[in-house]
Image (cartoon, rainbow, N blue to C red; front, side, top):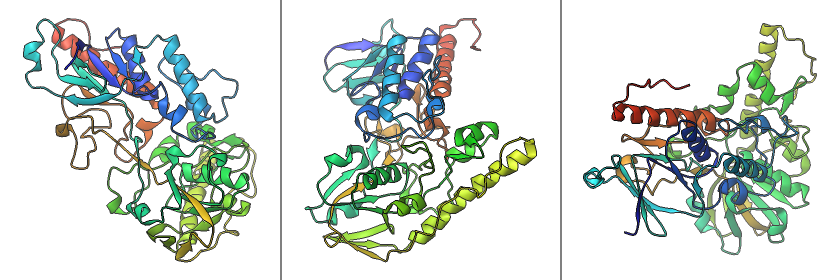
Amino acid sequence: MGAVEYSETVVIGAGQQGCGVAAALQELDREYVVLERGEIGQAWAHERWDSLLVGSGNRSVRFPGWDYDGADPGGCMPGRELARHLRRYAKERNLRVRQHTPVRKVECPPDASDRASDRDEVRFRTHLSAGGVIESRNLVAAVGGYAAPRVPDLASAIDPSVKQMPSRYYRNPESLPDGAVLVVGAGISGQQIADELVDAGLDVFLSVGRHRAWPRSYRGRSLQEWMFALSLYEDFVTHRTEGTDSSEGAALLPGLPVTAVKDKSGDLNLGTLAAKGVVLVGSTRAAKDHALLLEDNVVAIAKESSRSFREVIEKIDDGIRRRGFVVPEQNPAPGVDMDCIADFGNSLDLAHQNVKTIIWCTGFGPDYRILPESVLDDRGAPLQQKGILGAVPGLYYAGLPDGNSLAPVAISASVENGRFIARQIHIDHIMRSGSSASVITP
């Protein structure tokens, strides 16, 4: 089994959520170690495309005891810059992070406490891939809900001459083979990647799917400012459920509206993409060799996203009226321009259109296979309460959605999530030590 160590708390994952938990534990003088399979901020630095922009804005990039301190608080930084901020934060706070330390599995041995002698009770045994074990009373899984790319089964029926990749493996236009590109999915990944590819002069097809469209700014203020001023944050992070295909299952995490653009002007939606020359095609439903079967739903999808765009404009206008804010009018109000949008038909011939690459922007799912089966449901998703509390005492999650809300997944949520988990661990310590100290922490 190799060397056996002990730490009161083991945190798996050194993204913003894992580092947030570590810093919050440090604030309460609790013992911990963070295990990271790659580098701090691994996903932001190495598993997203080069030009990815953080749609929640620079002000949202904050961690316990640290707020964004750059020169562009109203901007949207690239993902790699976020990783740099996180690494600087971890270094300045001297967080205990072991990089390049993947975990093989976690077990909950029922008799471990019998062998713990004078150490704290052992609830978890974390086996490292390189050998060795870390026993702990608490375990925080901070691997998030976006660990495993989701590619539909139909991808296997496409001719192997067409290069296919999930968005995780796309980097930039220059890395792709010559020829047209089909981007599947109209969320943040799909729209930002399609926008970059068409700007690079490539022929681009975008297979649309359900999504929301919001304005980048309105009536002289950024969307992030209106969300703060009018308490619209829950509207932003809560996924609309009506009409959702139940076959997608609870493991499919909803996306956020697209609000970041490269040039910091205008909006990014199906209307702006179509105006640039991106060919919008319907949702992909089946495939055989070079033939894709599509749902003929481009206009329907665009109308639905346009409706979500109008709804938030109306909420902002209504909030301005109710609060009596003095702000300039904006006529006409921004929206999704439907003039360039038309239905495509129910099939796409990849060979005829010279499509050499397909980029699957079809979402991510959680990957918690390292945890014991007893704490997972029959889909392999965590059994949890409020996105944080696990199925057994001492098990916590950082970065999982709460029901239909993505609020706990947000970058800024690393502060609240981290401190909530750290308080629970601190309370547990006080209770079992028999201390008369108050469990109420600042």
